[in-house]
Picture 1 (cartoon, one colour):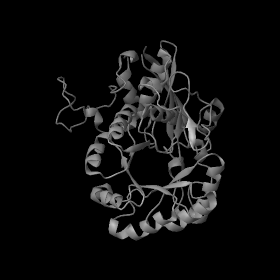
Picture 2: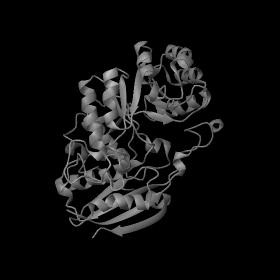
Picture 3: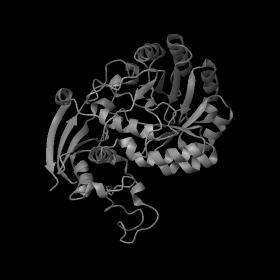
Picture 4: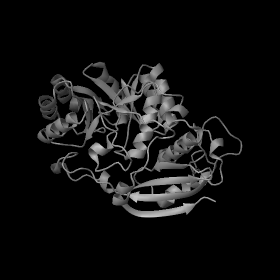
Length: 381
């Protein structure tokens, strides 16, 4: 089974107004950048879907798919597809060696290819009559825990957004923040609006700066009683302060793992209770297995994505035993559409994993037409 043609749609799908950030923190940016949704047609008659991260342009996509030109997809090991272009990579002072060795250069900078991995799982799954989660070893759950999401917001607007989130089925929220924000007041407002059982995850992306600067606020935050965890409170160069904060037992401490091999020193140090895994599907699955053995819970992190990518995420979460924490899957709750044929409705803080072969989803053609800025196609003969 070989790819013969690729049809691409460069889309921009805005967020709903006034529910993701407060105006005093400035406008959103993520929803104004384009993403490429693509359909890969094969000589076996199957059509697979992929969604690229923001920032990958037409030339980038073509370069990645060029590695699949003329390749029988059924011969590809999904654990390590031969995709990443290493021709200019000098990490090891050579181009990919003719004589293989134990350390794969593909670990360096390959996350941009996640949409190509999605299309491989979709096509191979459709050809074999298996779901993407089946191809990862089978599901351990049919429903995946998920949280709502918001950017930096005032306490009043946070309460309003979380009340809406609770009404549509969420049981918690992940919120962006900084030490300069009204974090304690924000937690109190959400608690009053949604109850103590509506859990908040605070994610400052390192902007609580240093343990000594933020510990007073963090103690007051913990006392509110509705904090599920704090993710990346400090820059990761201060990883010892993660361990120090965790030792106080105020709340769970989460570490954002951008490349799965970064997980091992964090586990050795005891720096986190939870790992936010953000990598290619099989690497997340393998890293999740390591976390299960180390008694570290995980979730799958996202980039406020659309439906094709979120379908892949649901399958990974379903097949990964340690994925017991709410993952970042909330697209149509934040954006005007997710461009697929279903909204991934939330019930009691969970989403159902798609059934059927491959990713188990189809594009919504009307929505795709509405949000497409540009179309282009190319052949793979």
